[in-house]
Structures are given as structure tokens and as C-alpha cells.
Image (cartoon, rainbow, N blue to C red; front, side, top):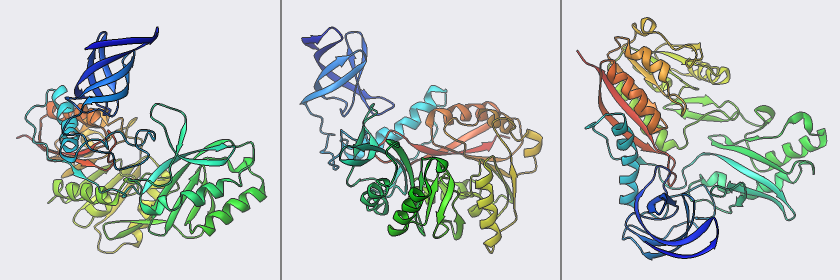
Length: 423
């Protein structure tokens, strides 16, 4: 390493060699006072950076890696939505898989078979939370910059479903109807089978009737299916639906949905495989039925979920479907009141898909049960590995982990784990 001239007491320039990629996708180099994290770099590269504490700002790549490629998006490096477009495909795949392997290793779970990741294609993200801010030139819609509160405008997006990308300009026009007192907001936009489902983070009670009417007119003109304000329906031109398998499901306003159809189909296929042959399945953290409605083709399903609107959507979908085994639903906070080992004893298989925080308490009850097979779906390798450790310590064998990449070019990776009770 060769130090350069200090530009101020808190920062200096340096030449560093990138050793690895960190968990958030930043390159990691050895600095004079410890690790330095440098965005948009590749292991093996010699780079010139401005160092401030443990953060490095890339100034130039002196010796580029063969694994570097030109980022395909014009917004890359400014928009904070993607961090890994500069990696060639094989390096990217290996890094995503290794995120899961490393998380398991840290919990002492070595030699677990981990598949290569299944990666969603570009322009397939069907839901997004967009940031919006009012400027002198009008409303700006996009994503926050990397480690910044600034909203970076986007005109098109490499990851978003084209139906959302095409709506960016009409959405900006629609926001022009908001009163002057609203200077920033966000929009949760989902591309459903019936049109865009738009939830605007504005309190309906704070808007005059004329403003609400103008927002409704703008949503109708752009072909939206529904407009909600903080989850409260303002206008429903059509009920937005998605399909889980062959079953149409009415979407709750701003409700959870897997990020891509391709990723969702992969997860459903893996869950069906893990629960194959089971006659009675518990689907925990069931949402609005992503797995329940496909599992019910061959098994009776008990769906447990805390969100009332999600359960109502699942129940409505099940009533309208044909050819399903019985689906029973239960509203229950599984963080506060997990299903007990005794309650679980009547099931042949358990599927659980918790939020990012994982399901520590529920995993402990499963570990104490005699359920033959467990399928764990997770959007966070760290909490997945923690919960997997609990199950393994309780007598389960982790036989396979399958990573699924729905958040392409981001640091996130999902996975599905297959567990079998050891005899």
C-alpha cells in the first residue's frame, strides 16, 4: 500500500488491493487501521481510493480484474438499487452461493450440499418501493443513492418489470396533484395480472377531496388497477390478482409478494419437492398463500399467519379454487406464540417462511417435535443459518440448501433448506 496526500484530517488517498467481497457486496481491502470497504470493486484489483475510517471511495481502478465487466445500466453507481452489476456472471453466481455457504459455516454447519443459485432474469421485479421528492423542476421518482438520503431519478430500470418502468413518467405526473405541503413520499408499486397496484404513502385525511379526485383520475388514466393511500383503498378500478399455481389470489393493499414470478415459481417448486408425499402440511408465516395454494393440490394444509388481510386473501382464493385439498387458516403471531411441538405432532411436514428476522422461537418448537420433514424458506442467510442450527441440534439433518436470487445485482439472496428427522 502507498499512501497519498491527505486531503483533510479525516481522509487520505491510498492504493489498496481488494482481497474479497463483503456481505453487502463491497470490496474489502486491508487499510492501515483495519478493513476498508470499497464499493464497485472486484477481488484481486489494485485500486486508488479515498479512505475515511472503514469506508473507501473508489477513485480509479489501477489493475482491473478479469472478472470485471462494464455495468449494463446507465444509473449504476449513482442509484443505490444495485451494487454488483460490475461482476461478470460466474463470479456473481459464486459470490451469491458463497453468502449462503459462509453463513452456514459460521454456525458450524459444514459440508451441507448447497446448489448453484437460480437467478431471476433482468426486468422481472414486479414490486418495488419507489422514493419520491418534490424539486423545483417537479417530482423526482427513483431509488435512494447509495448510503444517501438523496433520491436518484431513474428513467428506466434494468431490474424492474417493464410495466413499472413504463409507469414512471405517469407516476411523476400524478404526484403533481399533491399539495405544496407534501415534499416527499414513497410509492409501493406492484405489477399484478390486472394492472398496477399503487400504494401512496400519504394520509388520505390530509388531502382535500379535489386532490383525491385528481389522484384517482391520474391513476385511472394510466390504467392502474387500484390506488390506495397508506393501505386504505381510495379507488379500485379492478381487483388486482396474481396467480399461485393455477389459483388467482386477490392482493391485499401493499401486501407481501415474492419479488419475481420466476423466483416465486422456483420457491414453490422447491417447497413442493421438500413436502412431497406428505398428507398434512403446516404452512407457517403463510402470507396470502404462496405455498399453501400449491401444496393443497396434494395435501391438506393448515395455514398460519398473523396478518388479517393476507389471511382473508388466502381464504378468498381457496373458496374460488377447484381441485384443492382442505385449507384451514389460523391468525396467530408466531413470534409471540409459536406452534408448540405438541401442536405440530399431527403434521407430516412443516413449511416456514418468516420475515428477515427469522423464526428462532418457532424453530425451537419444531426442533422439539417429531415432524418427519421440514422445509425452511428464508430471505436472509444469517437468520436461516441460526434457525438451521437450532433444527440440527434438535435432531434434524440438513440435507440440501437451494439459493434463489430474486434481487438481482443486490446483495440479498434467498434460500430453501430441506430437513429430515434423524432416526
